[in-house]
Length: 455
Image 1: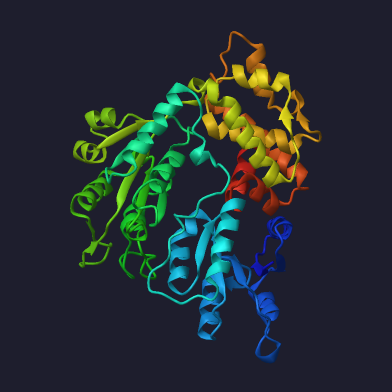
Image 2: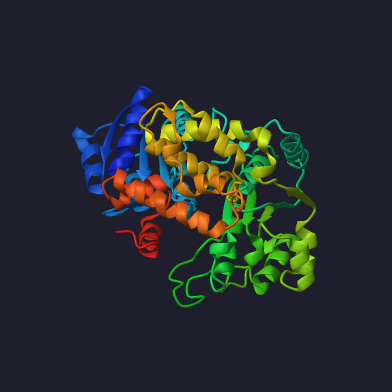
């Protein structure tokens, strides 16, 4: 049994986490701020010893990097790891440079947490090093979506391609509809590659503004532009020695494409505002839901960059073409939702399974995950029934004139609104809890509440 200190201001999440760790034989002291953590650690003769510190990055009275830096300067060498959102990954890398053992991105994968915790306990007190240890080699003990290969012929072919290209250093384009699991394929390639001990860094190019895309990818120096208040390491540097995954690469501006091509060809980047080139060793995997060759022919995407990226292409099939795999994915998502929501749904009713088999799944695996999470959340019994399904799915099955998923945007928005309303009711309109269950940040939740006029 380990004595753990958890510093997390989200009370719902900290309770779930402490209960989970308690069931695995650990003793957990929970603090919601740096001040409380200082009190729990004590000082002098009253100093309390913990085996591992688990620190959320953003806390009400500061951030865990400054807190950890202070502890290290005081001689505290207790193993610590940071829990952070995807957008704070570069911050977590900085944390490891000052002595954090590892970092875990939210939402937290329970098995990954246990693996990192075991490694931290085995390692004991840490030694501050100049370079961060990667978390990329941390693998789940139970099957995750990355390794659910399916039994259909098309799925076996997909993962045969993954196994073939993984040991090489070839650039890869992963093409598929939204929600098919392109990032999971990219992670599988990384974990099976010679770079598995290095970092896996994922970037959503669709979320990068034209002005900040180059800074995000290549970094910048302090004062390089308005708002550049400090030096920033780009994601290319963060991925050095590992894999950089660029999702929806077709959204990158033409100017950034030129810099990206140079980085791939010369393995050199130049941060904005700097004249000093930085050598990087990165394997690049790109994903897109469009045909980049067509985009290149239209002049929307650089043809030379396309050919540089397209050393190997993998097409991820939509869920509607993976009927033989549907039950495997359903069981995985049910188990996952039960764990996240503390429910005990054993199976789906025959009627629900019939709807699932007939439905077109325009949102693919992402939509299946969301629908099952909703089912599990609303089900009070061990068998999930039709009453917990989104209304538009039932309607699509009852109206033969309207193919399932024929109005993708309307279906997704209707489902999203209903899901948000149900979750808000479940947590009595606690926005922090709702955002946590929905796997989005509070800002996004407020935006969607306003968008859908949810009272």
